[in-house]
Image (cartoon, rainbow, N blue to C red; front, side):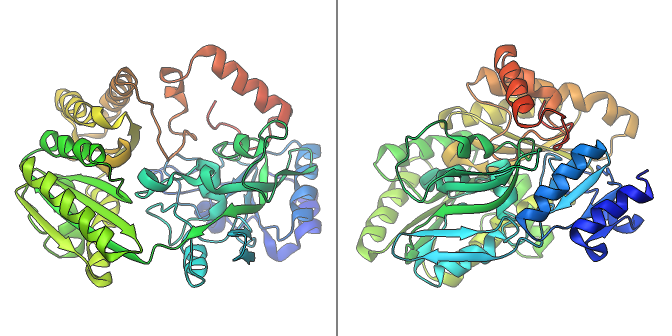
Length: 460
């Protein structure tokens, strides 16, 4: 337990209102969306300025306290769990959009801004920020950077790291650094910006973000296609790209995922009994171009055995289809205790991965439900406890996950596409990354954080 004088020093920096040891609050900040894990911190601190963050880190170093940064608490790999107790450093007060430059297509924001709020603000000005994680309504931009979030539109537009031009960040020593620049081309020294993205708060605390923006596509159209099986649908996916069309999103859902969403929403998914469904979105500004792309994609889907192809071409229909897709994650997780994996393979190997996942989980007597981003080969594998006893679940789950990850790596993939390694996946990291590479990661961590106070127990 922290001593009274230690709490007093933290309160001197941020004020007593923003520094609390309340048990219920600590329990709340000891959880995220990672299964049922809880690691309460000893104190929750909410700084409001870069200077306060710097002072807190200097003080934590002097006191030997661990510091776990936290955004919106929507992570799926335990990256924001205070596994060593200590300080939970909540960045929720850093919630301002500082500037939006319409001429340069750039914005400067604080890390506590929610992704959806930022997207809506720039869209009102005719601009576009493409990264689109499922939790966009509550996740923070800082957390998106920490995990290098992706989402459905990564297939055309890339992931979070592709939109970050520069950062302000605080090192464990309390020193403030500025990385990158407000330019689109930069070959000046080591790229510290990209090093910090995806580092899950283990190297520094981000306090400002400079983001690149795009012109807003004014029109979107969506096709929903049903197939007998994932294998058949995957062949159609390859053919779409070979035709020269890059959809703005290309999602797949197996039957069990669709049924879970139907129960969650109390609505019927079109062709919900089909073995697999593809959601394909195209976007742009010219109706004729989109119509031609939709027509070509429809012909491809039909030629590859689609059972039915439905078109959503007005904003409300598009929103309704996406609402069904976005509900799947929460719906599947509501079935029972679960483990969610974030495997990613080359797009053409997706059917082999899903088939292998089913074979592995069937052998262990475990249920797996798969859905995700067919366009970039990113499969969310939800492994459900179902009616298994606690003992059987504990006995089987680790071996099953290990086999799934080994299969993923054999297929040329890796064990996390957008959720990060965090706490829950760190023991599997050697399956994907060699010893030399892990040694370099440990050495980088030591350079940035020699005392090991920043988000300990994560990644390595």
